[in-house]
Length: 332
Image 1 (tube, rainbow, N blue to C red):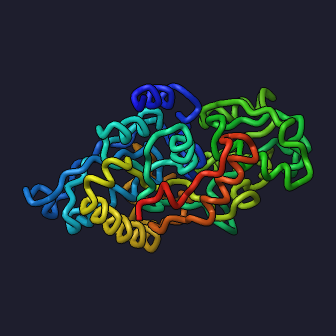
Image 2 (image 1 turned 90 degrees about the vertical axis):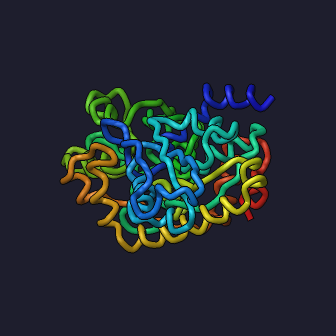
Image 3 (image 1 turned 30 degrees about the vertical axis):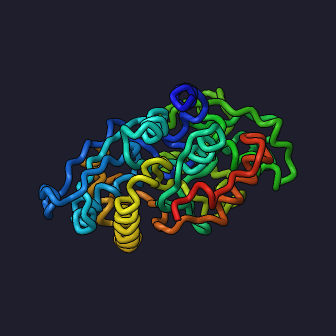
């Protein structure tokens, strides 16, 4: 049964873990597979674990933890496993071929709703509750679209359907008095969106960084708004998670991982330039782009209240039938 569920997840809409709602966009080229840092990580007394990350900018915080020897100080020898998409992440964690992963909380909540025994271990990254956010909806100035209320009857591009992009846009449109059911969403890779907007194939596009800044640098474009801030301010873009079985069988390892992540993410939040410095190698990102990239907020605390609100929106827009129990799917 679990194998069947894993196959369904890998093939279906839950495949959106890749960039779904993640604030920083993936660039051309995969993230490099990292080996443990030199500060004691090769010693035999460290517990070897595998951690799955996506090829997107916030994931570099895990690499930072390796390079700074933080995981090693907490007794962990981390092997990074990177991927371009999240379709394989949830089944891999569920079956135990991957111990931990970092990804979109909505996809984890959908997986639990489908019957997979997944556990959120820590928070990771969050969108900005105010100010310039790390994703937004862009339209051509000539279109006359200037608010989420104008999206009714329009075609909007998101990278993946049934995830944080379309969910937050629908809620933002509803709050503006529009009928979210009358917005047509289409899937499209982020690098292709601007060209399709220029051609008129779509009337608005949902973009993370660095694509958002690039699009807004063009004077013919306008920012419609930041849907995360309208729908759920401070919406988590990623969390770390494991399987219920691994959590129950490896309580000490999970505890060490939580403690390491708390230290890593606290330092990442205080030193964003240190993370930006790693991006050119980590993601094959242009150094000039990396230097000025807007980063999410990093925090290891599980944002239970916002996740519960996210669950309510999932019910409202029929992503799931019943309210997800965030406390039950979180490692204590």
